[in-house]
Image 1 (cartoon, rainbow, N blue to C red):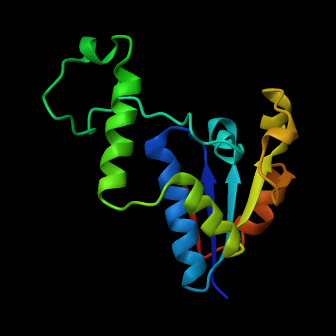
Image 2 (cartoon, helix red, strand yellow):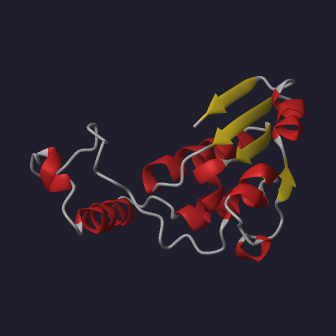
Length: 154
């Protein structure tokens, strides 16, 4: 059986989709999949994903309806507006929500590993996270990743 190992390091809306889309797709194709959530990516394992945002700041490839200078992107409310616009566009295009994609991964037996060091570092409470995840360090992930056919850092 082919294996795919993913490392999720970012917790923004635009960076949350790739590990869940790739993970669920690979699982559907018969891969054994493991996603290691570390640093800000660990927030993607929280029970509530409704506050995941996108930032137009320092994201020059982000398409905007009208060209905006960087200083406008820094104004209060721009992050909320960009997040609302992106979520609305995704809904109109029929893109699954993060929660739906994450659930799909779990139903397909994608293994979620929460970085124990990050949990400790940021003093997360394990009760904030979804059920069905494992906790481990880099060595835990590397054991799987070392034998994987595909290993991606997201």
